[in-house]
Image (cartoon, rainbow, N blue to C red; front, side):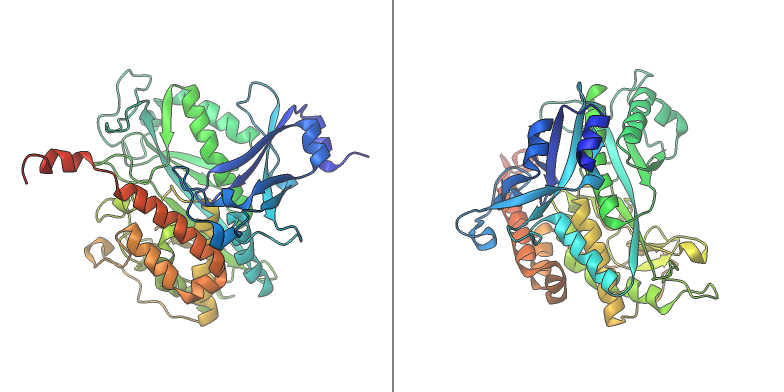
Length: 444
C-alpha cells in the first residue's frame, strides 16, 4: 500500500525531491534525493549547526547551542508543503521538513519550530491567529560588480524607469513576460498570491497574499522568494529582497496583517455590537511594547536599518493609528469581522517564520499582560522621535535583555540567533566602504 507522499510523487511523475529546511536567515538548506531514496529513507539527517549559518556562510561557536559533538537532527517531511518545482527541466518536487531531536521533540533552534511554539500558545487559550503578508521587492538589472550601485532593469520599451511609478499599470506591463510566468509558477506552486501592484520605487513591486494560518503563510513566503528569484533569472534580470537596495529609492517591507479568531471562529478584535474589543487594544499595546525588543527578527541585517528612515514610506517608531501609513502599527479600514492590525516594521529581508513568530509573540504578550496602548495618532508619525533601535548591534542588545521574549521563544534560540546576528555584524564592520575611501583617503 502506497503512502500519501508516494501517491503524490507518482501522480506528478517526480524523479527527484528537494528536501529543505529554513535556517535562521531564511535560506533553504538541505539535500536533493532521488525519488526512491527519498521514499526509502523517510527522513533526512543534517547537523544541527546547519541552522546557525550566517547569510555569508559563517557560523558562530555552536558548541553552547548544539553541543560539543555537533550532532545530527532528524528532518521529517511535512507532506502539506509538497510542491512541484515549476521551473525545473525535469519533474522535481520540493518538500519542507521539520527538524526533530532523536526523541521526536522539536529542535528549538529551528525557525519553523519557533513559529509552531508561538501558535501553540494561542491554541492553548482557544485562539487561532490569522496573518496576511504583503511583500515588496525590486527588479534590478543584472550586474556582477557588488561595488557598483544597482539600477532598474530595461523593460519592453528599451528604457529603464526614470522615476517612481507608484500604482502604474503601464510600468507593470513593461515586464509582462516576467509577471505572466511568475503568475503561472505561483499557481503551480500553490502560493495563493492575490494582487500585484507597482510600488513607489523604480522597479519596485508588491505582492499580497490571501490571509491564512501563520505556518502555512510562512511556508508560502519562503517558497515565493525563491520563485521570484528563479523567474527573474529566466528573464535576464535580478529580483532582490534586500530591505534597501538603492540609496535614493524607498525600502522594501513585508507588512504583516494579523487578527485572532476565537473558538467559534469570531474575530477576537470585535465585539458583537461591532465595536473594537479590549483584546484589540491589548494586542496593539503588546506590539508597541515589544516590537523594539524583537527588531533583529524584523530588521535582521545592517542594510535593514537603512530602510527605517523618515519620509521614506517606512516607520521609525511604534505609534499606531487608523489608516495611518506613517505609523509603525496601522489599523486598516474594515468591517468588524475583518478588524485587524498591520505591523509595518518588518523588512522583506526577514526570515518569514521568525518575523511572523515575533509579531504574534508581541501581540500575545500584550493580551496576556492586558496592556493598554497609547492614543491613536491622526497626524504624521514621521515627525515624532525614534522609538526603534537605529542599528543592528543595539537591536541585538535589546533582544538579549528582554526576559518575556526569551521565555516565549526559548532562551537557547534567542542566544543562538543573536550570536548569528552578532557574527554577521562583526563581518560587516570589517568592510572598508567606498564612502570611507572617497572622503577619508586623502582628506583626513
